[in-house]
Length: 517
Image (cartoon, rainbow, N blue to C red; front, top):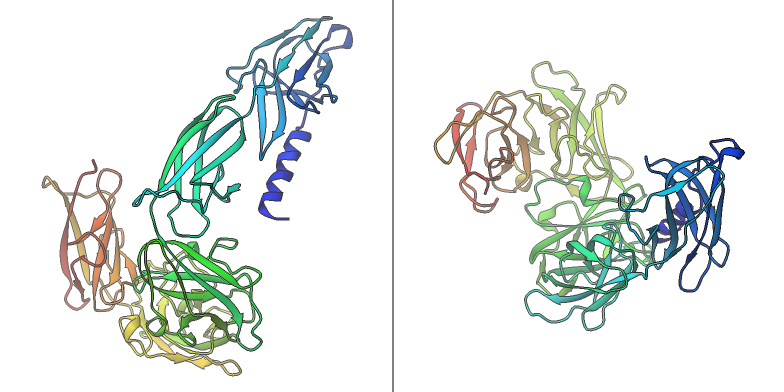
C-alpha cells in the first residue's frame, strides 16, 4: 500500500474506531439521552463523538443514511458533540453548532430522564486556491504539487498556475508547495486562513532551480534497478550524512530505474549512487561507468530553470577493502579504529560511510563492504571523536584529493593497513562579541579541510582542536541564538580564511561574533 493509501486507511480507522467510554456511567433510571440529526449535502453516514467538557471521550455512534443518531444512555452532565466525515482527502470535523474547535463548541446539558436534541447542519467545505508563479520571470508554474502535509503531495498539476485544494475544514493551515519537475524550490506558506464555503486565494512565488535526470541500470544485464539512492553532491559537500539517503525520498530510482534530482541550486555537481543493502557496489558516476574517486566523476553543470541529463548509472557487483589498524604507541591492533571511503561526522553513520571499524570480534581487522570494484581513497580515523587519534587518508595524506587510491576487490578484498597516532592540540579558538566583550559561553566550531572542504573535526569543549594532523582548515562556528553563525574570515566555505593547524606549532585565532538582529 502506498503512502497515500496508508493515510486514507489511518483516517478511516480514526473515524470508525475511536475508543469510547460508555455514556451510561449512571444507572439507566438516572440517565438522559442525546438524539438529533446532522444534515449535510448528499447525506450519508456520519461519525458522531460525545465528549465531556473535560476532554474525555464519552461515546461514539454512527448515523443512519439520513443523518439520524442517538446516544441512548448518557449520565447527567455537560458534553460537547463532534461530527466527522471524509471530505476530499481530509476528514472534515465539526462541533455543534457549526463550530470548528473543542474550545468554541457549544456545551450541551443533559438532565436525568430527559432527552436532549442536538441537530446541526454541516458547514460547507472550503478550499485554498493557489496561484503559483516563477519568482524571477513571473510566469505561471503548472508543474507543482500542494498539500497540507510536508512529507508527500496530495494535489498535483496547476492550470495556468492555478491549483486548488478542496475539502478543507475551516481553520488555519500550513500549505506545502513543491515542484513536480524539480525546476523550482519547495516553499511552505504558513498561516493560510480557511473560511467555511469561501475559497481562500494565495499567491505563491517559487524560486527557480535546476534538475538532473538519469537512469539506474545493471551493467551486466541492462535491466533497470529500483530503490537506489542517487545523491547530487558538490565537490565540497563536507560530509556524507544520513539525510542524503532517506529511503522513500525523491532521490531514489523508480521501478523503471529513472530518477529526477530536483530543487538544485545552480552549480556543479557529481552523483554518488548508493545501492544500499543489495549485491551492487557504491559508485561515483563517471562519464562511462563507475569510479571510486569523486574527482574522476562526471561534473554536471546545473542551470536554473533547466533539466540536464546525467550519464546512465551502470551498477557493478559489490567489492570490498580490508586491513589492519594499529596504535602507533603500542603497535597493537586498535579497537574502534575505523575506515571509510567518504568523509563522515561522528554519530551520523550510513551504509555508504560506515564507518567500518576494528571490533573485538573482527580479528583486528576492518572491512569496508558494498563498494564498486574501483580504486577508492580510504580515510582512517578513530570512532570516538573525544579521543585524540589523528585521522588521515590512504597514502598518509591529509586530504581526500591527494589520497593514494586503494583498489576494491570482488573475489579477494583490496587491502590497506594503517597506524593511528595520538596528537595534541594544534589550534585554540577564542571569541569576543562585536562590541569587544570576551565570550566564554557555548561555542561550536567545525573544521573543514581547506583543499577539499571535507569535514575534519569539531573543536572540543576546551575550545581546542585536538587530534588533527597538520593541515590548512577553514572554520565554521555557532555560538547560540544571541549571535549569528558564520565562517572565520568569510561568509562561506569558499571565502573563509585558511588557518594552519599544526600540533607541533599550535596557534590561536579569535572569532568576532556578530549579534543576531
